[in-house]
Length: 397
Image (cartoon, rainbow, N blue to C red; front, side, top):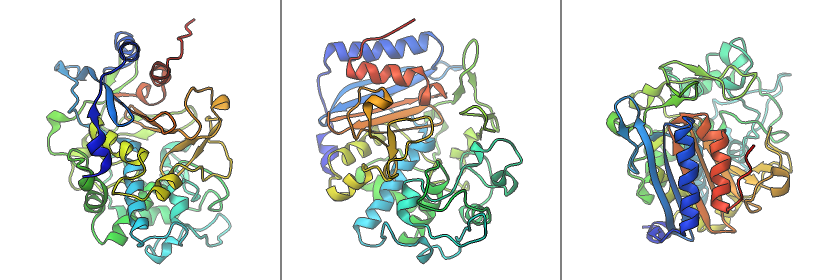
């Protein structure tokens, strides 16, 4: 048992804090911006607020519970990134080694045809020159033409085939010279599987989810009754996400082609960047383990490296003040980011409607899972919830 699991005990929530969080959640539900949510907040190893609200499935009036399983989308990334760091801790992977040592078949080239050297560090920090199909402007982009999967669709190809297709598209930039959100974590997943010598789902279980007791987290779930139904923000209320529906997260992009049924298909390839499902409690265990220095999973030096900005001072697109570590964003400048969070705070989200953060300076870890995209990932709810945790007065028009 890791140190973090032992310390995840129940605390008594400060009444004003709990009231503020509940108010934010209730307003989002009443305003029909969210269908349901699970919120967990820990301070110094104690869970000081836990809440399940709204519906896991609105049409059948199934209530959200703390045990509800969510499709994690990019919340998969810190899990798979941690698996890679465990291999580093075991001396089986070097952060700055050329990944062709283990993946000799994955050799994408630059636009001018020159070969490129990609390292595990660049995969972890999204500085490998790769992209995402959903970020292309239209259906004629190079990733779309190559038939590359973003790991959330119903594609029947294997992980190996997806990487083969990815390797045949020119890199967007020389690795290490820019930052771009990408399929890098899917490549990282293939690297983890190759080094561990097992399929990725088994490797992640042995390296991370098994040791931490994350019993409800994996690349497949056989119990649809426990999984939250996915919804899309709409007027007058969110609509149920349809199989194959494409929803752009940002203007000017073709958007993500979703397959809510994918998590029930044991033959779907394990996407390290987007393919897992799990509970809020499981993810909080992981975040608390990392916040406390890694427990028995990772040495403190590696968890510190995860939380160090790897971008060389580059800002993330539309996120001033934020850099990126090894698996998640890192806050460099709270003033520029207009946030009450501490310098060094870790944060990321998931396209099915999730956000999370770890503020090590304040001893805080929060997981906020919803079943409503994209309000629960990057909508007003995320900012309101953050401000409620930090006691920032509401400013409303």
